[in-house]
Image 1 (cartoon, rainbow, N blue to C red):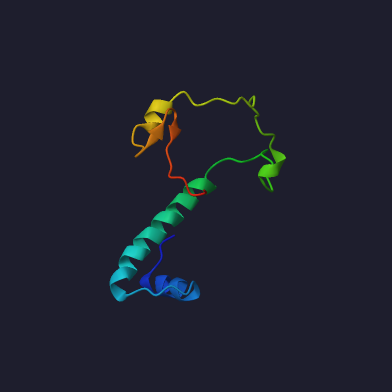
Image 2 (spheres, rainbow, N blue to C red; image 1 turned 60 degrees about the vertical axis):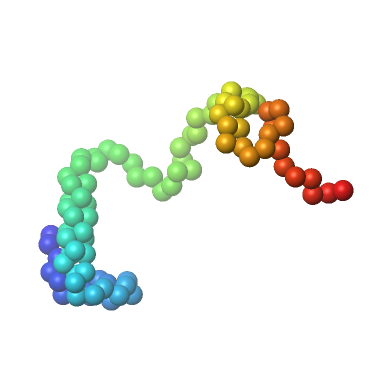
Length: 95
């Protein structure tokens, strides 16, 4: 499917996007490219694949919740303006 400039202008009007005449051709090429990708997706055989209604139907893979320091304290504090041991140094704000 290929869009003509009049269709691109109509799509822009429906989407309430201001498109100058100089931008119509570039937008037409982009939209035609997107429609080409959609045509490629339509060629995929999806027979026997049940559609998902959302991501909640999938089980999440869990990992152990382990507390670590990341092991890169020196790299994290390398650009700190002030440091106190392995911590950021900040000015005292409460007396």
